[in-house]
Image 1 (tube, rainbow, N blue to C red):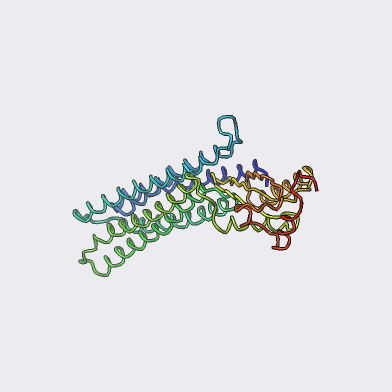
Image 2 (image 1 turned 30 degrees about the vertical axis):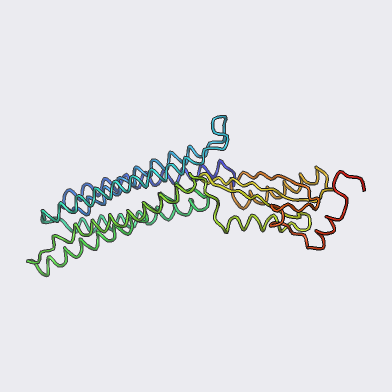
Length: 329
């Protein structure tokens, strides 16, 4: 899939999230105001944060899709990481507001009205967010977009929190009819606090994932193992490798390493092997930038080479006993 098509898919699904959240924020605010439910209002605030996060995600995927230029020679991928970090901060702020409002409601309980509408709007919210978050997560994983995955986690959390608020309102509604004198005013603010706890957990996870790439943390162990297997699988053409360094910016992977080849190999042959490896790695890690430094093996067996050496002891000794490269036999 070419870069233009990938960027179009990312932008389209990000825009879908913006539209969906805009509608849900309006509905929740109206119903929350009519019912007087702090948990519905908290959900409206949560969706408002999701809306802002969706707008940030939409802008970031459009920006990150731009090709490298003079000012950004390594591309614009980290705009997605900045987006994820910004979204996480917004969630922390929203959670603090929700807890504050819930505590106020516990101290000053008020009767709720039109609970049936509250239950209905929470059901609509759960279903809508489940559909949109699944789409965001699917495209986010296929395009390795942290901005889309962050937005998907926001909405997926909203699915659970909306369902929790819906259950809380349903309990008040049903129990209020069966036990009209029961004091159930505490259920609504407690449900709001549970919403806050859930979204704080999501915010923390998003913060950690976004910061990892901003700090140029290496790729996951299994991803680096795949790269090593890909290179060393070219045995006996490839004699060894060392100095593997990896990092990530948005959906872009940056990979570099030293590859050891036979000292008698021509420049053209070494170049073909390098190109073949770059193509294989780029196919596995879409949007990757691969730099391979070719080194000739002359049997000197420097400590950095031994760890990734594929030669047997006998082959290594034979090289060491042979005339050095550039010296007369």
